[in-house]
Image: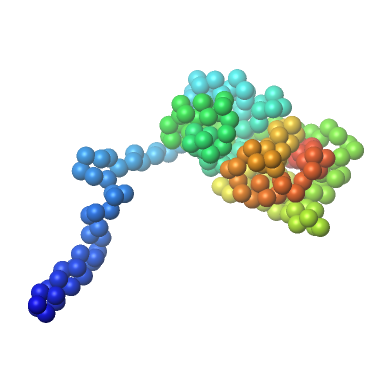
Length: 219
């Protein structure tokens, strides 16, 4: 009996050497294929897809939307755009229009479109409300200390250029679009960024309008 137990322990120990986890349910089975490897972003294809899928109708052919309710996508960090498209497609970020558009795109097409847009220069915007711009600058550059609201510049950079991969470009974006997104974060309608939900929850309508207008003029 002792000999049998010793042999069993040796057999079990041997099964855990190397990577012999054949029972791993996540491993592709004999009839399954591993996910296709994504290729290098193809900007030419990205332009074709962007225009062919009617994205340009809302965001303009060069990604500089002329409609304040629709964001400018030009010069945005490609990784951020891919993340948003993926989350529209999965439903993590809600939008009847964008969910339908993203559903038509493959992962490779998302990358192609994102890098195409990232290669286009954003057209500068401008602040419109002179009475609020000082408040907006104060919030953007210094936050609101007594409510623990951090400075927007800490993540999105002093000139609104953001930080590649991590934080999106904001400078020059339509004030109306920024305000709508901050309000959506605050009111629980946009749920795909925990940090932004926490920040926006501490802002009132006037502060949202002020910082959004200031951002529009950043470049």
